[in-house]
Image (cartoon, rainbow, N blue to C red; front, side, top):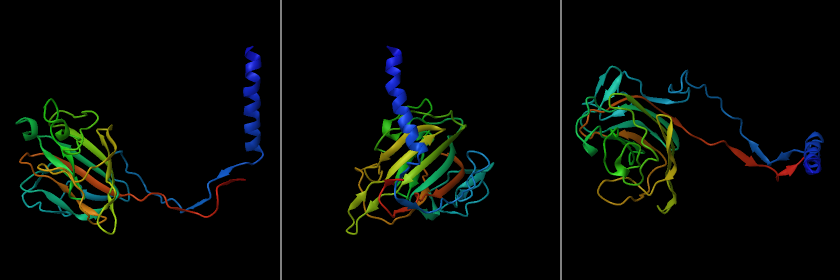
Length: 253
């Protein structure tokens, strides 16, 4: 019986393989633009060749508002008021490393609080969430007041955390209405915590989120919340999807 069952399967495989050997190949009809070559960083956290390095541990030349921030051992330490990048970005990849203060002081939202604002208005929360309870959509890795992270991947205070962010900017129609929402994917210390989450709008503390039309690009901002959170190795890559044009109908050849 087993031999009889194997015969149809073998025949099907032989016919499929024969089709490949005879030269049948599916073509999608798209002519693609040549793929750009980008040299990766020497290590996983090092900036690729096409990245804009916003902070390399030496100065705040890429930022506005950093007059009261300091640099200690190659890390930017939060001072008074938020800092905002001089460069603006739309769809992009963002790498940020941050460390909650040691010794830990305070609790809830008062412990190691800061935030990464994409386009200056959409916040990915920074908080010392290591053994520190707070409201779920306000912990580290949350899209503030919209969704918690899938898991809590925090390292203890004083150790370095990494956010790797894939950001899709929102699009607006000519009349200012929303065409497509912003979306974000985040890895926290290599752990997937946000998977293409579509934002409901901006991320204020005191009202519901909403979208208001804005430009195709915006700055990166880092929040001051009266806690000396440290940041280092901040870089951004603008993202452009592969480009192609349908030049003929899909077909076999």
